[in-house]
Length: 251
Ligand SMILES: [Zn+2]
Image (cartoon, rainbow, N blue to C red; front, side, top):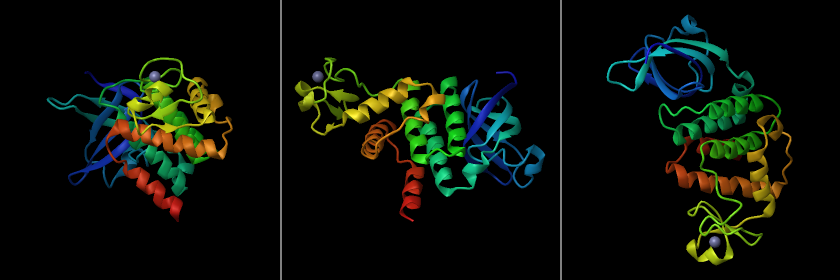
């Protein structure tokens, strides 16, 4: 790959030896990319303050290194730092969760511009007045949809028959299952129609409109626990940021 340029958002930051960094970016044009930045720690001014921080929106220039899937990043210029997110521990915790979730469900080089725009728009929404919980739920639903791992909600995930309001949600089967198929997953749980409708509504709406959708408290709670179980089943790894969110909400 010759020298490339792309908009990117920092998902992860790891120190490398004394002065270098490895950043994991989600880029607009190349999907997830890892890049080494040499000799940058302790002299940030050189690249513009804050551009190496997790969640920064940057423009980066990078190129191949021989025999490695980690690129050399020669330039990393800050576009947006999302200041309001960094001033609130709660917003920061939720933003870190979105970054960690995205990192855990994507592989290097998997380009998906919709996913890049989703993360960027979600960070912008989180910077404003929207509740952190709401932004996280919107992010989860849209992410599942854009990655093609959305739970089946219109027909039974086991036998493909149309489902009615008696359907249960099965994490293992990947969505709603009909009465005839309850025995295929004993852990399936009942789910409110409102929760199913909300998920479908958010999936179908363009991002500019999702922030205004109202949700009842009971639906909000069921939505959170259902999506959590579904995502945990798919990612097979505990997200550190979830522990951080729990600690903040306790205090
Ligand atoms: Zn069925």
